[in-house]
Amino acid sequence: MIAEPPITSIVTTGDGSLTLRSTRYGETYRSDRGAVGEARQVFLEASGIGARLQAGLACRVLEIGFGVGTTALVTADVACSAGTALELVSIENDPVSVSQLGECQHGGWIEHSPLLENLIQQWPTEPVSRVMLKLSESPAIQVELRFEDVCHVALPTDHFDAVYLDGFSHACNPEPWSVPVLARLRDALVPGGSLVTYSSRGQLQRDLRGVGFDVERLIGPAGKRETLRARRAG
Image (cartoon, rainbow, N blue to C red):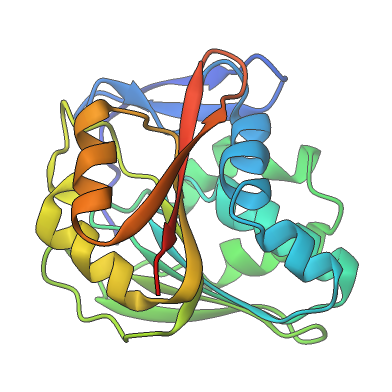
C-alpha cells in the first residue's frame, strides 16, 4: 500500500474546511487561514478556469502538487455544476494515503459528492507511477495522477489552459520553483495560458519573467497580501 507521509495533525482552517500538516515539510497542505477559500481564489478564479468552465469551455489544467486534493476537487465541482468537460493532470511526488484523503472530509463543502466518492474508490492502494481517475462520466471529468518528480516528468507542449503551481514553499521544497521547471511549465501552456500560485516571492517573479511570462500581482486571500498570475507571452 502507499505509505502514509508523516502527518502531525488535522487542521481546521479559517473557513471551516480541513487540511493536514506535514511533519516532513513543516507546513499545511493548504492555507490554515482558509483551505477552500485559498483554492478557489488563488487557483480556480485567478487562472480563469472557473469562468471558462461556467462558460461551457472544456479545460485542461496542470497541477503541480495534488496534496490532499482540495484544489482538484474545487475545480471538478465547478466543472460538474457547469456540465463542462475537464482534464486535470496532477503531479505529486509524495502522495497521501486514501485514509488521509478521507480525514479531510471534503464532502462537507463540495456540491457533487460523487466526485469525492469516485476519487476515494479509485485512489491507488499499491505503488504506481501513473493512474487515471474518472470522477464523472457526464460531464467528462478525469484526473490523471502522476506520482513523479516534477523535475523529470515529461510534459506536452502547448497543451494546458492553466498551471496551478502549488508545491510546498520554496524554503523547504525548492525544486518545483526552479528556473528549469518554470521554463517547462511555460512550454506546457497554450499561448496566453496562465500559471497561478500562492507565492509572491520577488525572486519567483523575476524567474517567471526570465522564462517568458508576463507577471502580475493579485490581492491574496486571507493571510496572504499578494499572489501571482503569470501569462505565457506568446
